[in-house]
Image 1 (spheres, helix red, strand yellow):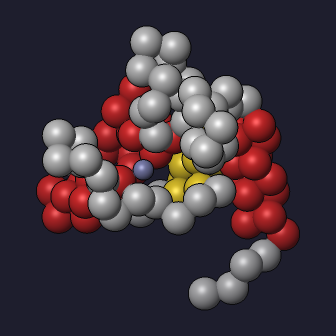
Image 2 (cartoon, rainbow, N blue to C red):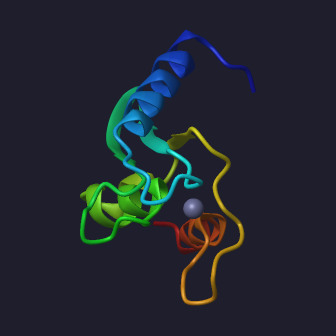
Length: 107
Ligand SMILES: [Zn+2]
């Protein structure tokens, strides 16, 4: 898999999303995420996009709040400015688990 000019444009958009973050604590990362299918951005988000849930991760917001149809995620490419989390506090689902669950559900 190679990284081309189009990937660079989508990654730059993910960085633009990340710039919108207002970290609730100084150590919290700014993270942006963009979901692309057939060369089009179908959803995007950033960490803390929704003020009522300031710690919600960019990918969580993207898939659970901003993507109109979850089925569209199948075969799409996710661009994220930080490696998706694989470990979270027990009541929250890590993004890597969410993605593999979606993959196995076919949606
Ligand atoms: Zn995460």
